[in-house]
Image (cartoon, rainbow, N blue to C red; front, side, top):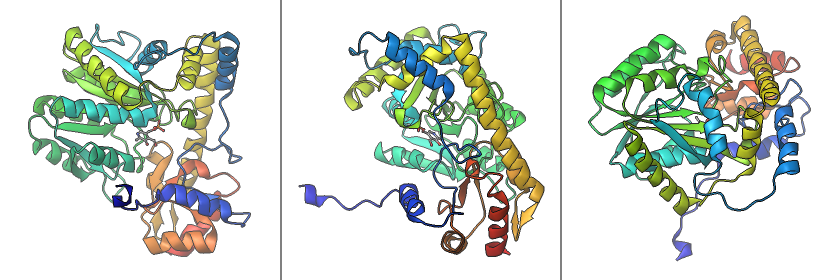
Length: 392
Ligand SMILES: Cc1ncc(COP(=O)(O)O)c(C=O)c1O
């Protein structure tokens, strides 16, 4: 039976990591893998996480099973940051469960949508490649529209058209902030319009918030999610702590449900628990517990927010330097200055991307996606010069 399986292509980004580490050039630049890097090129564990992990080791007295919902203290501690401090449960209409990273949360959101009768999910492209893989794996149809134009701005007409053409029972998947891969986010005014359009059409929003705090700030990055929730009766929200707490491999995430009533919410979550039980039984505990310990302790919370601020300012600084350079050969770098988060896409051909890698030691995804955090004061001038050399 097993020989019936076809060989699957290797993950392109993981293959890129291998190529990069085998490259002996001292001035090589890795803009491929999607993790934050300091000005020294490191991806360190947050100080707040280290302190919380120590506290966990010192105080945890059992590793007995929790349940498919995971650590509900963690799930609830995040809610004021996502949904606002005033009434984060929207009078008992929002609750959630822990998931293995944002990926687990997105997968569960799509599975819940499908189980509720959704057969089509509308989504802007390009997107995080795993979105399409998850939809494919769960046999939900992807209806795509163009997320952004060549001018580096959101293509609102494409989104309006996709919503106008939607059918009753469709879901719409949107990135909450720091769009992966383009870095091109909706403005507050655009979110206002989108929220009204979704409400008027009766679509089920699936909001993927994987980078809160890495764009404009924790509050600012929640604008879109909060605005949509204020207009619609129900929604699914997939959340990742893997970037904003630097927990990547520890797989820390949560899925939240907003339902019309507390009774429906309870029913939806019981389905979430059943789906989780059949898939991964329960989420890994360690990372979620460490995040909870941070959020329960004002001093650790302040330390975490400060570390997050440092990350955000560093990326804003790199983006400002790129925008100041104006252009690199034929590439206009100015749009990168007002994009958000770790990623942007450069309009490079496959041949130019290959040349950058082979002749200049610059590694980026085949889509032209670059991780802004891979640039430092020590390599940014070389990057701009090499970009000019291949595109000029
Ligand atoms: C848009 C988006 N959603 C979800 C995720 C999932 O994050 P993780 O599973 O690492 O928590 C990512 C990660 O790259 C992402 O870019």
